[in-house]
Length: 439
Image (cartoon, rainbow, N blue to C red; front, side):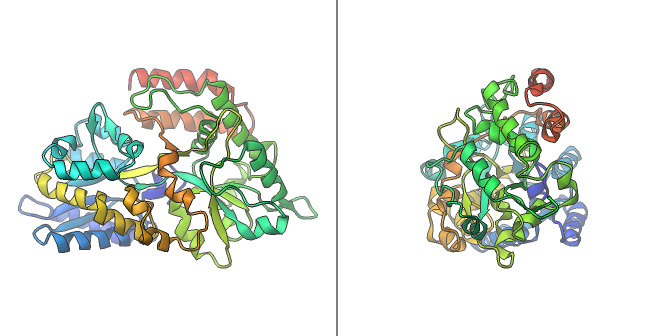
């Protein structure tokens, strides 16, 4: 649960011993005579527990298939690449929306359409119950390289008590009821407090995600997608005036309006702790923060949608999702298929929804009583249930790791307030387009 694109779902922080033990077992005990189906994933301790429960449920239904959990270390993409390059690719792999395209492009992942074609019953069930944009996230060059297993888009958590004390009206409760950048800023100003020395004692807004990605999310909520097309783009919209207006608004929250910590201030504070302790009124985050905030003593919170700029009529989240893929080299493809079907199908998704740790990806699970019960303290549950259908995806390209490095360098000065967002149109756009032309 870090503040990096992979980090929020990457390491088993606080459970490194378990992760190391599992990886040691994998390295030493998966020879040709081992019949266990290997499942590689990254998780924090709570998520790992849910996944192990799902594995137990699967093994009870399929007693002839044993699943060995392989927990990732700090860099899951590098681990997968190393395993697979060495001929020891796990059978089932967690797939990230940002990185799977590179693995698919290298032939590491199996095109699941080949298995769907042999299983028309499941294919029909999936089509009837699914949310298409989530599945399209894992569609690359005409193939389906993973099935989504959870939605991890971003929205806003807000402190109900602080809103009430400041006399600020509660924010919108549904994606179909957007609030404007101006309304959001007014609320953040009213909710930012300073002591007699001028130091901030309560922030109106904090960001617990990745700053450059969040800035792009504000650009997207000013009516412009990150790229057109989304799949294999040759151009990113970092030179679009409306997109850059959204980016500038996000940067100004800290550097101009002083309602959010600056980039330098966040180096010495935890934005997540600020919200958990009641020292921030709103926090941009995804559902992976829910359990932390739910356990925070005395924190009375709810959810709201992201604000929209003048060029946007409907609020949008990002399509943040992990999926399950099957290694093209797997010797247990049919067993792997049964496991992927179970986790991404109705039974597995119901378990995921009832856990309170994930937002499932099937409509039946999202709308289930179990999902509502797991979030019973949330009044604005529609922010979660409507999130997947009100999301837009980030670009899907094998070159995303290179693009991410360019973004990290170029967004820094903008977020620190030393350059305007329009500077991205000159530097970042040209560099990114060069990378996309020759990934």
